[in-house]
Image (cartoon, rainbow, N blue to C red):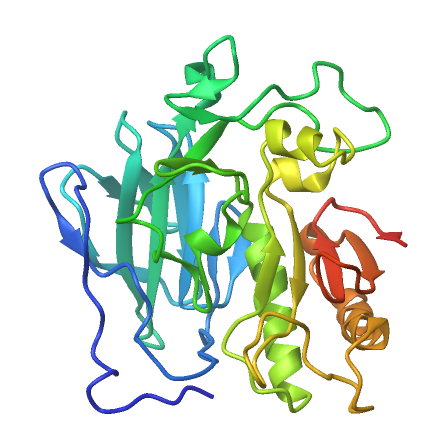
Length: 321
């Protein structure tokens, strides 16, 4: 359920420099709690089914996106630099040849619901210099050898630029771009890798958390994307799913919002049992989830640096620890 005041129910307009200074609605309505809206007819974006009314996707400059939905789609709003054509199967969006945000709003002809796609043309990985820098931001170097036991181990195609102006862009109804920024020190701009499949998985989990009686408007992302440089500095595996934007270390932090996991199992203590409660909820969702969202699940207790949390990822196959 979504709780909005009369004033906050108005759409928030975020102004970005999109080609010819085009202004589009990038954010979901500003609300006081979880945005539970779902589309009656999901939109397929290059075959990925999206039931949420807001989603971000990422392609290289000049890339194409194919949108389809039961009942057909009608364009509502888009920037002038975004090339759009209609086919019998849906709409084809072609991104400009330069990096940036290129949002589009479409309406389902049958349900009349709107879907906002925040499309981003990535900064190509070829723009990394020999030292592993994008401008003044140190990304580091991805593993040169593919691990045959894992998937998605080629370096990502590109990066999403995060600035103060774009940090609050919605990558899904209840998550913003800044929540997934690498924790390494330094100012803006930063660069991120993020997979839409992870956002779909986190939205499903947030819905399950709310339906279980824990009112939360988002999940706390303790660790989202990690650059190879940062990941190496903290001593993690060079093939961590975090480097490919497909993993998040999360916990529920809503009642109260104090930087640590809530007492999810109701025993009056904050410890690994709350992480295990959340992991069990995720496990129950996994069997019914889309195969593109299958992945790893691990539970962790508290230490001097953090409270209990759960790791989730979308590596494409089951892994538990």
